[in-house]
Image (cartoon, rainbow, N blue to C red; front, side, top):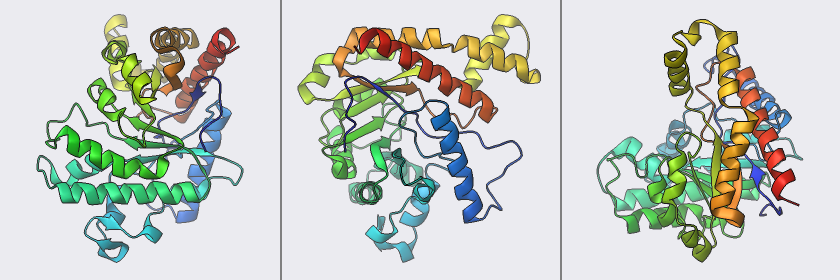
Length: 326
């Protein structure tokens, strides 16, 4: 089930802007799945090779709601196997494979329990996460799996030991052994520990917004653990990007949407993305496995602008392959 490629693949992290004027509340399940289907098609049309099912729902509640429902669990925080379904996967066409992102056990834990250390609950959540991934794998639509753990290395509420965190991640990722499974991090501090988790073979960090993060990763650790890197090549922190542009230009781009789009696309051009990819490759060589935006695009002002950023990524990856993947 691993992607067969002599070079990197292009994926995205997941979240996406809603169409203008659309709200999730009030949509029927059928209408919601059509919305997911439409955005999945937009990602593919923009050139994303391994698109994540569009994540419109809250990354915590979409998993914790069923996990906390006594009718859907077999014990506290352990979801029944038959209930570990991701609704959005119903919208994936039969001939399409996607990146299946599940919020990781640590992220789920701290959302409900904060700076406490009930390891039994953490491990139950990890087992629930593994069941979501197992069910997605078995339904035949998953080409890449991902655990979303943005708080590791950043949030002081994570009070578990490294050994406990890695054990939870091992439980969660156990259905993914033998296939491509990423862990999505916002800090480089947990890259090397996560490289030792048997079910995880790709670690990803936000290296477009924070290029220095790559210097904190030891390639030899990746080699020793047979782990690969996902490089972020497009910034997604749109609020910080526009604030930077506003300061430089002495304007408020939020009041001029067409100009905002032009300036952001100049700031995040295919040439700049290709340069970031070249730098990552110069540092990690064959350990570079995937590339795409740093994080999700859900906070971006429009679907059209999100489409264009993904298209720029696709162009950069294509140009990189022409230079390197011969």
